Amino acid sequence: MSGTVQERVYLHKQIETMDLRELKDMQLKKLKAVVDRALRTEWYAGVLGKAGIRSGDDIRSLDDLRKIPFTAKNDLRDAFPSGLLSVDRDEIVRIHASSGTTGIPTVIYHTQGDLDNWTALTARSLTATGCTKKDVLQNMMSYGLFTGGLGVHYAAESIGMMVVPAGSGNTQRQFKLMKDFQTTTVHATPSYMLHLHSKMEDFGIRREDLKLARALVGAEPHSEDIRKKIEHLYGIDVYNSYGLSEMNGPGVAFECTEKQDMHLWEDAYIMEIINPETLEPVKEGETGELVLTTLDRVGTPILRYRTRDLTSVNPRPCPCGRTHRRIRRIIGRSDDMLIINGVNVFPSQIEEVIMGMNETGTNYQIVIEKNGALDRMIVKTEVSRELFSDNQRDLERLKQCIQDNLAVSISIKPKVELHQPGVLPVSEGKAVRVIDNR
Ligand code: DLL
Image (spheres, rainbow, N blue to C red):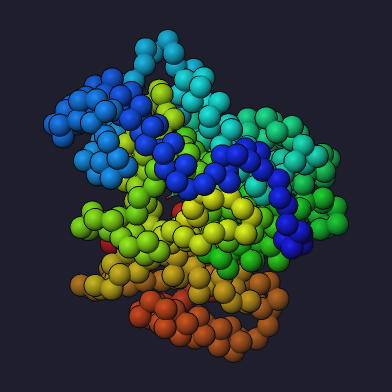
């Protein structure tokens, strides 16, 4: 693994290493301008008007950000299709959209300038992980309205990488492309990386057939143990990438070669971490919900967006020299918390236990159902092929051990089921880990 090799390459050195005070001045200037642009949209004209904000000049300091009401996913739905459009439609060159769980879409309109800014931020992120024009990037995220495909595609091209636009799925072809074009870098969801590995043997692929050096993984929550597992299975470096379509997509926050939390690009976004119940800011370093404001967006400016993602700020300076503050791994969403017989459980806690054990495989699922008046949780996990051929007593012991570890972590003792590799369903996009049948 090349994790110890410290790359000191910046794509935008002056901005990436900018003094924090200067960065804040820049944010204030941009905030005033984005408020002016937001006022040109039907939606924010109403919302900001009610809050007494009639021009960007009503924002005199970064603290005045708090005068602006939060924007929620539902607001984007209510504003569909064009309530958040801030320029003439002729200026728009692309949209990205998501249908969400309710089926009502949200849409983000991008001008050419918006796309260029997004490309630059993502290219900066790729460079921070050590990618250069010598690398070949195989993009295994889906191309289309989802932002993981095109977002990383254009960024990689812009720094001269050769891109293999494989898209998601078709595992056998992914291996063939990796071999034929000597892919050094892959972009995929962490669950797909694990799935891919479980198929290597079936397709007769040996590790030495591949030139793989790093994986950029994101789009879904995953634990540090999952990162370590992927690194160990392939012998590569794995970097965490965070983003959301409302804020462009990938390229919002990214790990650098230090692999210690993700730099959130503060020249493009203002971040706040709030307590999701009181909506007040948490103390620096405490966990809360991430709220983001776009600073450069022209087509669809979005102010104080409640991401629902739970994280905290790592305020320590990063040895890489970048000054933009880092956010820690997303531990879950303020709305995906499970309540099992009154106990709050985040799926990430269960994942940590399962992935932290050597015997457990690469795929798992959490099923919740009603058992009379009570809730019952079943944790299904795949275990290695060898274990399955061993005797029954070892499997029983492992089951017990998983149960005990879960009881310590989540204060609940769920039913545990062990399965052979390849039995639990895999999805080509984001993994579906929780099936709530209550
Ligand atoms: O998932 C954008 C993306 C593509 C990010 C490729 C990284 C790589 P959406 O489909 O809008 O956009 O989903 C955004 O996914 O609010 C988080 O809940 C979750 N998410 C994204 N990245 C991470 C991550 C893309 N690294 C939602 N860790 C976000 C945990 C993540 N959760």
